[in-house]
Image 1 (tube, rainbow over the protein chains, first blue to last red):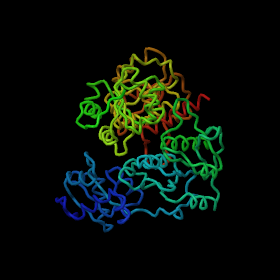
Image 2 (tube, helix red, strand yellow):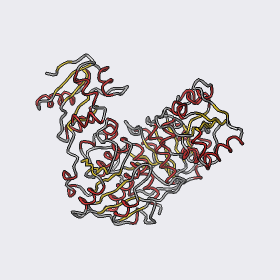
Image 3 (cartoon, rainbow over the protein chains, first blue to last red):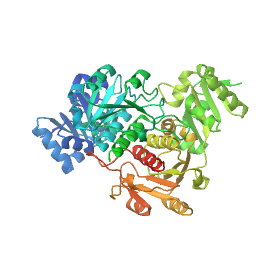
Image 4 (cartoon, rainbow over the protein chains, first blue to last red):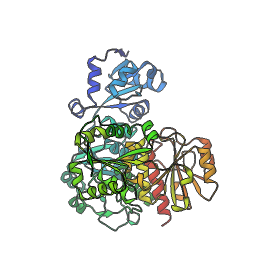
Length: 265
Length: 265
């Protein structure tokens, strides 16, 4: 049976709330996901929360009831609480009726099997967690394997990133590595490294992409450093028709990803 | 000469700060844009702020100095202030060194000349101002004419939308209309209405798009209502390879927009 918590001062509530901070996520090895849709996505991908907190109303949904039961059966901590405590824990005005704390996956490059998917996203020093989540969501849509985060990036397990991923956090692999380490891993097996750049005339529509294709997206402000561009097998340009010279990072990732897929059909 | 304001209680500071709220934007007919990049974009598109507030450091940039002088010459109110007041006014921790208040453009459909561009975005009940700004930015990149917001949508002149647009607020036209009014305007002249939908097998890569092409993006949660879909000339599906059945709204807009452009090359 779930236990009931009605006090905001409760230690588990405080612990869950602390997971909104990167430092606490790292120490605890846990991260938060909210909402029936994302928590169902997690379950369907074989992942149950360590701690699952929900409102009485939330528990009434048949799918939620299933996941609560499965979490209990797996030895997880299930907690019924008030909408107010859910809201204060997740930091959202319109709280979801379920909030789970999940084990963080291994984010080492060694955990990635590149043959598992034909496309992988690689993002360098992304600052916006929303962009990271959106790239994961797009990755799921195009059948990518996951996202490799290069150098210092926003946390893919932040509440904002998980929310923007709409559950793709649980279906896409995420790895983190410095550029040098990524390049030596990449070159240990076949793989085409494609960078988007302003420093080329090669149109993104006219390139032969090969499987597995690694699509590199640069930092939101600076794009990809020149020495990183130099390591790419091919640099492509997405032509701009207007005044601006760049796209939002998650948009650039999607335009490239869908084009690679279209070129293979 | 700019006047100097160092008190947070100053009436103009309060007025600028109020523009973070939709109601005040509507009453004043003004909206905020921050940062040298966006304010330069505005100037290059022929628009100067009614009020321009900046830090001493901000004014030292030659481009900023030009825009400050031009704003004064045009009769605008130019104000030098402290970084702290700039930060409190824009609501950003890392304030930009310039903040402008601009006149809101006419957002009636009648102001739109559809022959001015081959592609127009149409978005129905978008809730996220970041998506609206990102669609404007993508519109600029593909040479779209602008964005028509249908029914009740987030405000395209909110600080978040303007920020995400990276200046495209000033280069793309924005109109607002209820669906019925949009349809009667649309059908008064040639124009292809294309909806993305889950309710069709027609692949987005296999369609002949015609100029001017109106790309409709549905609400983030619900997609397009069935009776709106029925009005479209063609419904297309962006195939999904993964578990999820939808893309982020701004991503869907970009994938469609770049594909229409690619199909014409």
